[in-house]
Length: 169
Image 1 (spheres, rainbow, N blue to C red):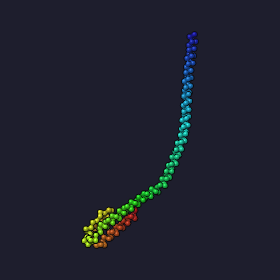
Image 2 (tube, rainbow, N blue to C red):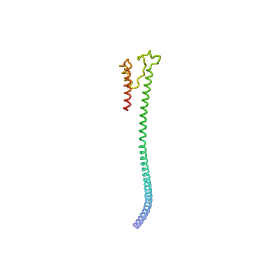
Image 3 (cartoon, one colour):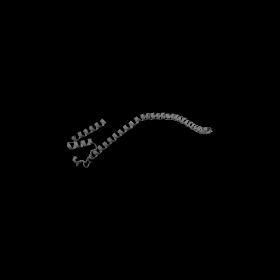
Image 4 (cartoon, rainbow, N blue to C red):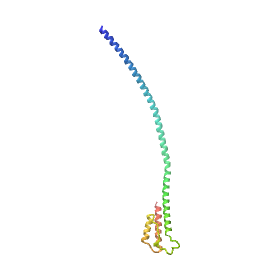
């Protein structure tokens, strides 16, 4: 009888074990079903986002192409502005040189009252503004001819040098 009782007890224990094992497996199956459903939703969301990302990239490429096209159209305008800046710089330099030359001539011209009294050594000259003017003044100081004709040829050389500089630009 002990054998029968032990077998019955083992059978009951096995039945209880199987019952709890079945509950655990059903719970695990339910969890796996939820995980599977969640993965399907994630996959669907990723597919939708992938489409939107592709659309965004295409739109960004279109915008980039449009910006590049517009930049190519603006390039000539920017070159014109750069050229205008250079021209204005040259005009400013020329105006400065002309005003310096005029000021030098006005300062070197004796007044009517002093015309007979002033000699060439007493004249006040403006400091040379350009290297060309400094060269001309150094030649005048070194090779100054007391006659009127000696000074004129230096002015012609200065004028020719200025014309040559302008033509080179």
